[in-house]
Image (tube, rainbow, N blue to C red):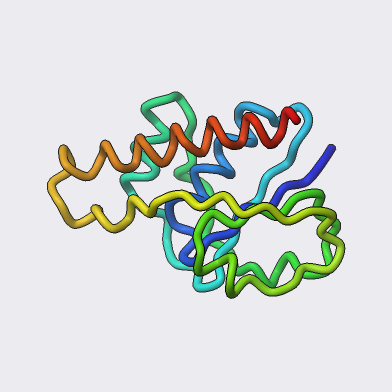
Length: 136
């Protein structure tokens, strides 16, 4: 089974949604983990956006990217510019891909009806771009 690591700064939204997508949709061929350069907690609206498509990420944990250094990883995907600039070099990573996705967490403190479309947009874009990446 191939391994993919998705990295963003807080490991709270985009990378967590991507981890859930990969494991749910391509889990027969890929094992995904996610991590952050400054890990925090999983955003409740990211959990809700994924639940809308039948994927439960509520049990996932935020992790620091350093714990993956030295592991054999087929693809490292950075989903934010900050992570792309600050992610440490991961020896053993065969390929690194930058997939910039706008951060829906910026809308977390707004009313849910305003914030959720941004989380759905990030989720759906991740799904499309991961589909192309993992099936190419």
